[in-house]
Image (cartoon, rainbow, N blue to C red; front, side, top):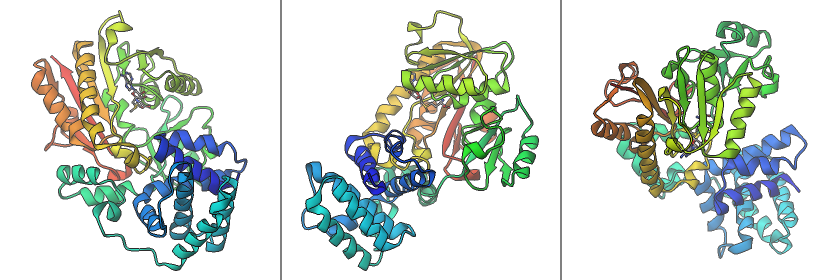
Length: 426
Ligand SMILES: C[S@@+](CC[C@H](N)C(=O)[O-])C[C@H]1O[C@@H](n2cnc3c(N)ncnc32)[C@H](O)[C@@H]1O
């Protein structure tokens, strides 16, 4: 099946079935042998997600009546066609003929002429300046724009702009194997340009690269992890001999980093998604690290843990992921406004429950990849108000004296949007 048809299938899965791109895309990439084709398929799918409202309007304006039911996939195919015409260097004639051929392959012979005509029509038009409403102007759902405007009155446009950039590739140096400077020298020897990030192990590549081209990737010398996510293990500060809980561990990026910093600990890594937990094991294996993996609910620790209370807990809570839209543009269309209150309730239950399982004197690091205060500073403010034996640690407050915890916004020091609060139990 041609690449445009595969792209339409992926986009159909995301927009009509609610699957994430990271699940739907690899499923279709399997049908392609060539790395370049896989990359182009990804570019088309991610690209459509980034500028969906503008494409959608353009395609809809060219149709006399909307495509419904099973024919919906042809609408998604038209989005792919429109994206190629407006946002790629693919020659128009190739974009149009390949997209029309995809329509045939998707078994909508009767619509091939329509697809052809609509794309030719779009090709003749200038890319419209879409300022009719904010959703079209910013390619972002209205509810999210509203929340960002209220949380960041002076910065919301910059945040949206940053959320549409292509994300950089960050590496985490494995300090058990070599120093970050040593690995930077090795990268330099391989003509790979890189610089250091603000946390201890972070390396920022000038351009993304296939991991297999990185020196000793398979041997575990480095892992791929955003610079913001790498702050988690450093802020948790694991110490020799401690019992540590990684409460929402999958796929295990932070689990592995904690163990690279201090392997003489007993680390319990928990996740309620068994499939995702398998990925934690794969990551541990690649890096020759060990943790106890438990398939369990972080909001019901009593059900699977009868041991001591923990010295440290990392609660990397499920969240809206609004800080990582540049990596997962489908989040804009998969999340709903009402999800935020629901997530905030879940996070609040989890933090209370984890707190109960923290030793006096222990540290709980609360983390999200959200940029919404309801999940972050307001969440922690409410927790501190209802928890007399909890206090906010100064380590993070020095980074941000105005607010509760440390809110990183997308693009800040080239990092993803992230939030950290370090809590100490009296
Ligand atoms: C932000 S991700 C964690 C990322 C991970 N810490 C890392 O660095 O690779 C949140 C995780 O929480 C898990 N999760 C959601 N609800 C949970 C629950 N009630 N108990 C345990 N894990 C949960 C999800 O399956 C997901 O893997």
